[in-house]
Image (cartoon, rainbow, N blue to C red; front, side, top):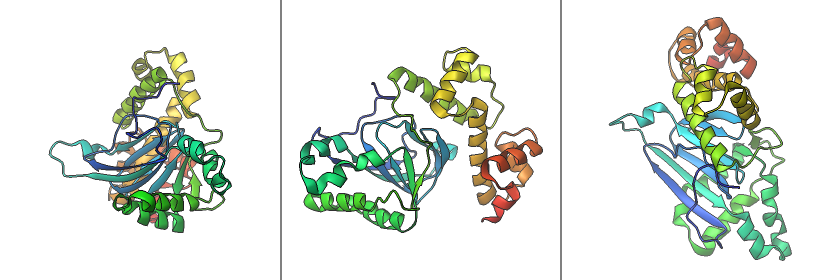
Length: 288
């Protein structure tokens, strides 16, 4: 299969781990996938995380583990794209090529669990609790390590991934939908960009179907197959996710938040918010 977007991790074919530091005004903002698993610490920056069928927000301190070949994008908030803005992002990421590891250690019993760890990484996980704290400390300094020290810390990080622990929070439905053809991937990237850029206004099905160069009927089938949601459900999830942020971080009234994220009536906002979060907007704001 071709990749969603031409996105290659610069590495040798014989390299098990690759470390990358993202620095700049915003994170890489195209939907993409790669054959390596990915462990990312968000050091600085906020935005929307779209991975597989999951829609949510990321913020400083978050740690995510992503399976190989799963379409994803860390899309920075719109204010990170403003001209002459001073907002910056920082992220530290480890990429794991388990195929390279398997070639090297498949016949060594001591590495059996490590070689087969990739089978347990199904979809995306948000890592929390003590596991997150320990991994964050290592990822924050990972650029300082080299040689056997780097490999040792990498193996230690992987040894911390206990998939029976409550610290490993799965974000995707099972089974996971992985790998799109290049054509479908570019189509989805265009659609996602359009939805994210326009989610605060009313978007017609005709408009978004045009972005994919499809009829309304064909687009509905295409979109639901890849997100497990209808177009309307997906947009509602994006709006509620944005509303959760505004309720906690601003003094806007609930009515103002409702209209700012794209709902036409307060009653519809309240009903949708409770359906998706099992809380009212008022109760969510109290979490602050």
